[in-house]
Image 1 (spheres, rainbow, N blue to C red):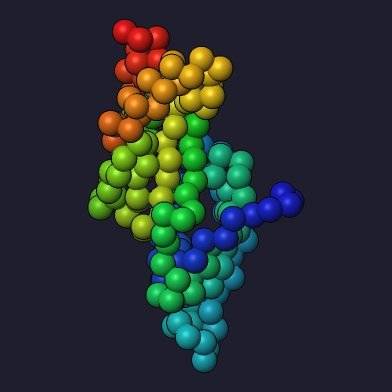
Image 2 (cartoon, rainbow, N blue to C red):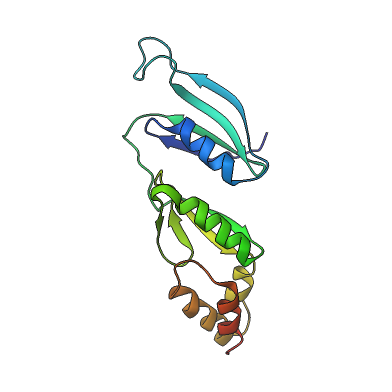
Length: 158
């Protein structure tokens, strides 16, 4: 069991969201589910909570009602080695009502924020050469979905 597990509060569509996320990320599985019973705030048989894994990362999903919607204050970063991987996650997570935001950020159709980030990005932005790092940052700030080749080109001053 991992020490810290993100818990995601959904209105009433946690089961649908788990299926959606599991279809996108490899090594995904649901390990435990519990359901509301009679006399609860949701119809009996509605998913109460589930433990699930996305690419080996444990999550907990809860159907808790509309009181606490997702905000950009919490997001999940997906590090990608290639542009193909960036494009793949971007397309799948923005499908069916997701929204592109800026600088590699998007919101999926459930309102959860994701950062689809090339693995090289932290290296570019923390380079000791402040001019190179600054060029990479300026290029990123103009992008919606991140473009690895364009980021590297800006970093190298081309």
